[in-house]
Image (cartoon, rainbow, N blue to C red; front, side, top):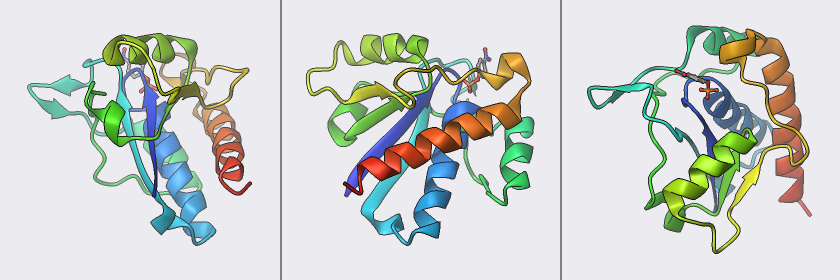
Length: 150
Ligand code: 4NP
């Protein structure tokens, strides 16, 4: 089984969108059982009194437009011990990469990378452009899945 963790700053917009978009692609291609897919935050900003916030409502609405559910998802923070379990940490931007490397204290097995190698996924938390984020993430997820078909 291939184990993938999508990573962003807050785990309420981009990385949960990536998690559920990727899971949707897996379901549509009959490949769900080949993967374990999760998402997490480099920050603890969306974890309040030990409880993770649900996915941001505008991200949820954007997913729903594409008939993708994200029910039951709450923000969790990336932990050093995740490094052993997961095969890939797919970050949304350079800042997430830098913070993930701090949490892991390095990346000896080259598990950390960006969803789109030459592009950051603009944060819709700041831009308000959830439709653009969806399209960017969908493109990245399709390319990622295609890598595992080689
Ligand atoms: P995300 O977006 O990293 O895509 O989940 C953000 C969510 C919350 C904050 C920043 C980015 N925040 O500062 O609370």
